[in-house]
Length: 192
Image (tube, rainbow, N blue to C red; front, side, top):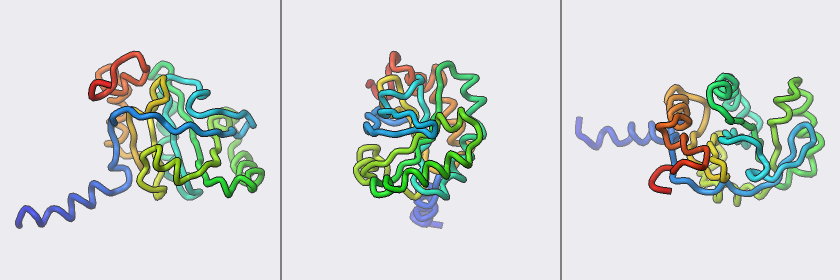
């Protein structure tokens, strides 16, 4: 088999959901407004408690399946990593804002736990601008981003949780990883 015969296989692996993960050169998370399912308003990322903060960003209802793969493991991780908080930020285009009462109400009725409702913050925004500023290729899968104290993305993953993404996140949150920089007072990757 020639070396070029492996190119399609490599491209398929690289572009598969969940494969895009790891530390990134820190960049600012886009500033957006949101309201959680307990009706508290937030400027994101500035007013989100936690250091570091892990954001799960779905764009479509069916992506809740991908979010749930992460949610199953995150409570234990918050016990291991001091200050870590995680949030689910369903991000919809501004046009859906007129239906907020129904969309948010439907989500709220499906979530009995008040803590889960408090960390679910719906964002209605110019989705095209958001995707560009957040350096997200498209909205085909969820985006998972680790933010430092200054609101910069230091690590990211795409799609459902995979063993590789989990290992990468745990490393990023360790003192040896670039996400050990998630506290904002340690240097991030590539000399930032």
